[in-house]
Image 1 (cartoon, one colour):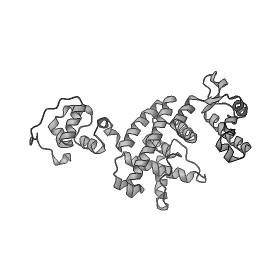
Image 2 (cartoon, helix red, strand yellow):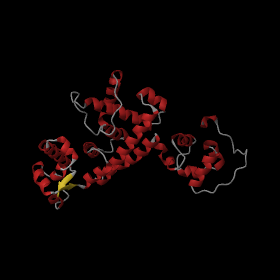
Image 3 (cartoon, helix red, strand yellow):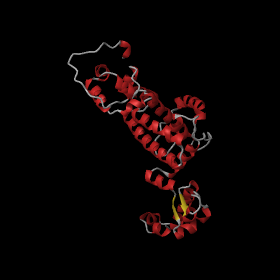
Image 4 (cartoon, rainbow, N blue to C red):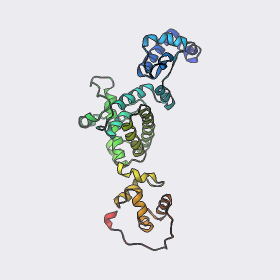
Length: 304
């Protein structure tokens, strides 16, 4: 490995291979401490994840270091090892007492989510109050106020609160006014969150954190559509998003079973004829043509 890096353009540019070697040793020390690489000798033991930092030099020279199962998957997911270690530590602390905010703050406090939503001076007290309420839900301990990363931590709280508002179906005007987030920024944050949640789900599956996997799976769908949990069953259908799904629930249609029971004419009054027909087809039901101008009953104004 040393000889490989010695021949790279990076090494030639750095022009101080001795110093570069020290950097490589520090990085490998971290990777072994985190359990992302190990020696071949360790593989013969019961999937031991760590090797001592003192044995790194000999293992590098003899080519006996290789990625662990977790380390290999992290490389494939293209997330920073520092982020991966943060996620793994958080997942270890996940329990039934935690909730969606716990996971949202976990992914918000990562390198990949930057730039985070900055806490303005006038918002500081409000965010601190929210932090006091939510402190028991954190998967990562709050750093000292004197820590260099404390500002980023506070920004991660605001970012997590933004995501929480999004999945609670707050509209774009509310998000702009409350968090100063524009529609284009919402989309970028959505995509980054989905990537980090997918990576978290993969790592949780490898380590068999079943409760965390269940929560993350639901949260990925909620982030994608910006919906509350009660709409998830309806989002399985093509053409049904947060607005149409909420219309259905408002009309007491909360599941695929409810959709199968309702007649096409009534469903057309809620979703429109074309979408209603498409939903019925997706449910495997035969469509009977409805004569033009036909209405079955009249919806109360309370249904809208």
